[in-house]
Amino acid sequence: MNYKRFIFAVIILMIILLGIYFINGDQLFNDKDKEVQKAEGTEFIMNTFVRIRIYDKNSEVILSDTLQKLRHLENIFSKTIEESDINKLNYNAGIAAVKVNKHTYDILKESHKFAEMTEGSFDPTIGPLVSLWGIGTDDQKVPSENEIRQVVGKVNYKDIEFLDNNRVFLKKRGMSLDLGAIAKGYAADNIIEYYEQIDIESAYINMGGNVSVYKRKVDDSLWKIGIQDPDQSRGGIIAVLNIEDTSVVTSGNYERYFLKDGVRYHHIIDPETGYPAKNGIISSTVISHDSSYADALSTSFYILGVEKSFDLVEKLKDIKIILVTEDNKAYVSEKLKAKIEFTVDELEIIYR
Image: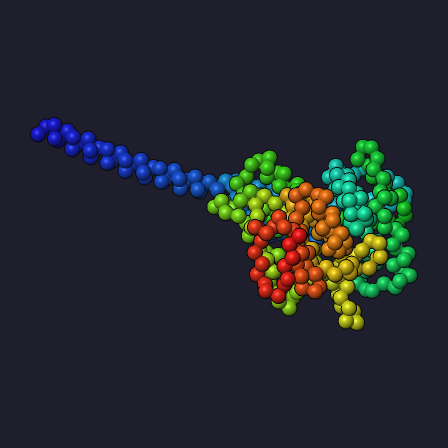
């Protein structure tokens, strides 16, 4: 009898211990879950609303640091901030070299590289033409051919001179830098590099059509990123991309434009002609792990057209594109086939 009582007592003890184990194990799991907190923020930076989602045990601190870093980059890149590097360079064009922040020097070097790569379709010295058209401002207008002809001569990336000690010189008086087609991409890359250094759990950054995601979502699923439908009569999105650790940037004629005598004048200006680009494309999306590439090339491909864009993509690594044309066709990189889901029937999808 004593032996049976002993066995019974051991069984009861084991049940109690197992119960404690499962309770504690579940508690540990829940505590671990609680370590990953979500922090969200929206702020107007770099002339757009920036929306950020951070998942990490220090998410609030990381969100604050992220916004601070973005404001710093805006303060040195914005041509409208009096003390910015870009404003100082524009003011001293044709007069003197300016010592700039390393970020400014680096982004101008990258811009020069993209200009060479696209044979000038991307040009950071587009500023005089942007100011002349004034699209998206109270001063927007259709300039005369004579005005455009005079200003086009001031647009040439080859007139940027890089000197030692982070000094930059714009060779011609009247030159003007405008980093609107690359600044957000560069900023996103800078933030993602910061996330990599501190190894956070997951993040999502949307800078007005420039989307970057870090790692997968916290539930280990892929991020779903919608591609804006350039046909505003349909509204919504034309496709959904399933991605991780990458950037998606779209440029379209629906972003900033005005109508004059029934003609739509959009903000993507061809540096060669001085007019808004008109090459059949109404939306250009670039997918790349490098957001600077995606940002700069989405503008370039819009200007280059379908054939030249795909010719360039073949020479580049880690670049995939979606080009929507005015005749209701979508030209898509073959490598995206397994990652994209189209949501409209009106488009003819052509994989290349």
